Image (cartoon, rainbow, N blue to C red; front, side, top):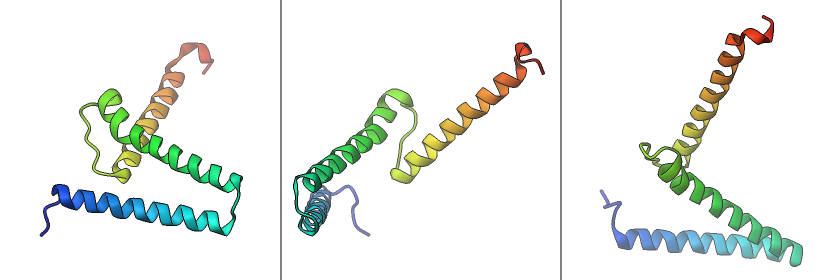
Length: 102
């Protein structure tokens, strides 16, 4: 079994991911060259980087410091549970409200 915390392995993984991203962006640009395509690629990369930052830094540091995420799937599952609980709380609160006429 490989050491998943190896600095060298993480650097290689980051380099490979950067290469895949650069090749994908290049192929997209070559398929439809132009300023619009370039701008859309840049905005896509920036937006997903911000979502990643939000999911793995903001949520852990400011929203729920007790929860540790193991990947994108765990972030989605966590946010789904939070949203579902808030919606359920809203429904429960409105049914308990005597001013709603029910």
